[in-house]
Image 1: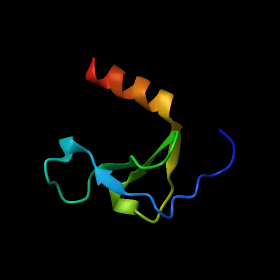
Image 2: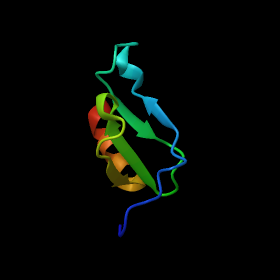
Image 3: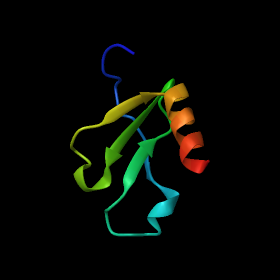
Image 4: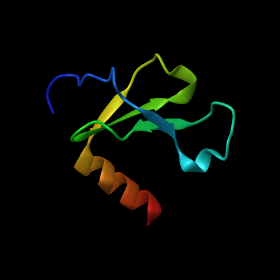
Length: 65
């Protein structure tokens, strides 16, 4: 992947495993074509890690397994 995607329209959601906790969560944006941005909910204006959609799917499958 090259360049930084425009995240101005990203719709962020917390992990379903956060159990309604304060802000100690990982957030992902699902509405970005081909990529999955990830951030720390405590630092919503902070850095974002952007994964390719395939890499993110592999990661999630590994965590579930």
